Structures are given as structure tokens and as C-alpha cells.
Image 1 (cartoon, rainbow, N blue to C red):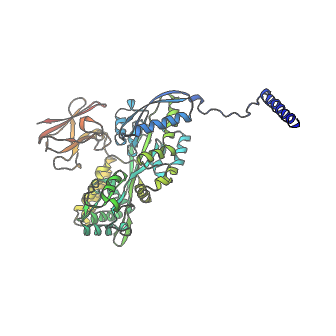
Image 2 (cartoon, rainbow, N blue to C red; image 1 turned 90 degrees about the horizontal axis):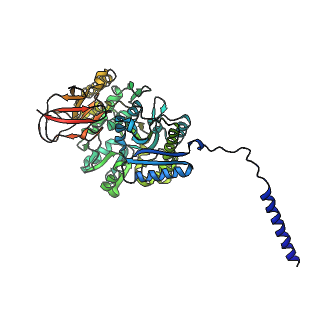
Image 3 (cartoon, rainbow, N blue to C red; image 1 turned 120 degrees about the vertical axis):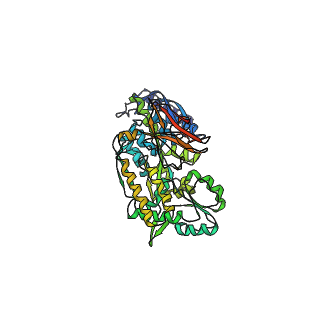
Length: 513
């Protein structure tokens, strides 16, 4: 009985406490936290361009769904299309009004996009977040005149060295001279694209040279600090000459046939694995020696960025900024690494075990110590600088090397003194009329929105494009596509090249003569 009475008493007390709790009015939170998204709640229809690679759009949609879950009340109806990051910038600049709200693009297109008013600069808070969380190179690559205009998405666009460990040991991999000797002995090629300015720069960076371009707030180039034509530049040319004149040298770094070494990037990781198999090695670039002094080869480093188009609707603009920050955060970058092996720009993601274990990304990171973030560079520079590798290969004396540097310097100086008329002028360029993408054949106006070249003797198989201002900023290829594929001549003969362009749509024609 006593136990029964005790249990009854306990139950009575519990019921009384429950009643008191239920009947006691709740004390208001003295400091309620405001909902940061209260003013942004709503449904937003957005358009978006991401890589055309299979599966990328699906992953981005999943990440947008996760953003919605993390931000209740914000609903994103996204139309996602696949457009190559290499082409996105040209297409946006060609028609900003119809461009997507968010788009991914290669960092070297940033200047043109800023100049076209196609990017909304980041606010102070967003910019601080991006600067804190991403590596310095990617932040620099997203910046114009001190203002951050885009959200870093990857940090993996650069080159390093894949090599055959059966003929080159780790010690020899540090020396360009040893690599050349090993490949010559084994009958293998050293594939290094020295007739491409992106790779040619590695020798100049090694000796302390630079070509730093300055733009104004509108994205127009107004100055350059370039010291390629210097004593150190001559040393760089001698280093290139040593490699380019070796029988082992080959300038085609996109094929692996007979390769002992290929200087390339992560985009060729699978090709490298297939070619080298169990003998695959990957590391930073080597050093070369001139007059007893050693110079470690440098490299360009580049990035993929996410941009937001300026909006008239301030609420939508704020949501797009939040979404872009989310889609480029640590978690989303790691998800894209896990799915596609894209190298993250987020510092925490870079430090993850999975990323650290990637052979190619480890080599890219090792070379990063000697890398130079690819800033904004005048579009004509690539044509001017790319000939230096060929000049080094053909040079018979130091005087020849110096002449090449003098010519380079004169061409660089000429870029900043171009008249408005020259900047607007159209020309034809390609592997035509005995040239090799190093000569612009002028076009003259022939009525409204029409330009025509002189008569050109073209051969079947020749390739060409039409461009403006002797630069690659605005160019048209097959079907008049901005930055499109090269136009190929089908039948040998004499032709005029005709461009019809109304500022939006382009058409390039071959007119038989």
C-alpha cells in the first residue's frame, strides 16, 4: 500500500507541474534574431550557363536545391544550359542583354566582360568572404582595378610536367638539361608548346621578366610594364633555344606519341595516364642553366570564375549574389572535384585529403610556387609573344635572339598607340598566304556593316578567322560564331573574304574571284 500511495503522489505532482508549465505564459525572446532573408523571400526565375561537360548541369541543379533548403522562402526556378567556359565570355559580350543571369567563364575573359558592363561588382561583404576563403591567385584573377567582379570557382588551369619514370628519375626531373639528354638517348620527345605565348612565358618568368598590363575602371588597357626585352629576357631566349634546337623537342603538347615528357595541364591527365601507364610521373617544371646560373621555369596559372550579370531588380541581384557565393563555397567546390576532378580555389577544399592525393593537382600545386597568376592581358599580346619560341628555334646567334626581342618590344609599344580607327579595323588572319597566324590581312568597309579583304590566294585546307583590332577579343569563325572554330578553305583559288556584321549577328563568306 505504501508503494501505491507513493506512486500516486508522484503522478499527482507530475500532473501539477505539467499544468503549471502549460498555463504559464511564455516570456518573449528579449533579443529575437531577424530573418536575414525576410525581404528576399519569393520566387526567382533565373538563367544560367555552366560547363557543357556531361553531368555538370545536373550537379549545379542539385546544389541550387540545397541552397533553397538552406534559405527557406527563396525559390529558384533555374534554366541551366551548357556553354564552354572558353566561349561564354565572347557570347556574353556579343549580346549582354540576352546573356544569362549567372555564367561560368575562363578568367582571361574578365577584362572584356567588365568593359562590356556584363558583370556586377561584388559588394563589400561578399568581396571580403571571397577574399578570405579563396587562394590569392584566383582572387587576383577575378579583380580589375582593385574591384572584385566575379566568384572564383576553380584553381587548376596551369601547366606542369608529366614524364616517363622509366627513363627520367626524380633527380633528373629537376633539370631541363638532364631531361633533354635522357629523352635524346631514349629516342623520346620533350613536348613543350613553345610556339604558344602561354607556354613561352615560362622561360621569361624564370629569369624574372614580366608583362603586366594595366586597365582603367572601364576595362581599357592604358599601360604595360614589360621587360622581356632585357638582359634577363635574352637569358630566357637562350634557355628556349637550348630546348627548341634539340632533336627531342616537339612543339605539339596535345599528343603523347613517342613522348618522354609532356608539359601540359590537368585536362590531359587521362591521356598522360594512358600513355605512361605504370611509369607515369607528374611534378613541377624543371630548371635550366645559362652561363652557370640555374633558373626554375615559371608558368601561367589561370582560373574559372562565376559571374553575375547586373540586374535592375535589386532583390534579384541580392539573391543572385548569395547564390553565386553558395555555388562557389567549399562544399560545392569539393562536390565538383569529386565528380569531375576540378581543382578547387577554396583554400579549405584544397587542403582536403582527396584533393591532396590527386597526382596532377599535387604537381599543379608544386608548380604554383613558381606560377604567375594570369592577369588581364591585351588580346594582341598572344600573337606578338608566341613568335619568340619559333625565333629561338631558328636563331643562329645571340644577335638573332636580340633582334627577336627588339621586334617584340616595338610591337608591344605599338599596341598602346593604336588609333581608334585601328582598334575598330577588321582583318583576316590564319594559316594563309604563306603566314602562320602571325599576319593580319586588312579588310576595308564596303557599304554599311560590310567589310571585304583584298584578293587572297588560298589553298585547300588553309584555316582562317576574321578579327577586330588585330586582337582576339572580338573574332568570328565558322557560321559567324563569336570565337568560333576556324574556317577551313575547301577548294584552292583566289578569294575575297567578306564580313557582314551588324553588331549582333556575323556572317563570314569566301567570294571567288
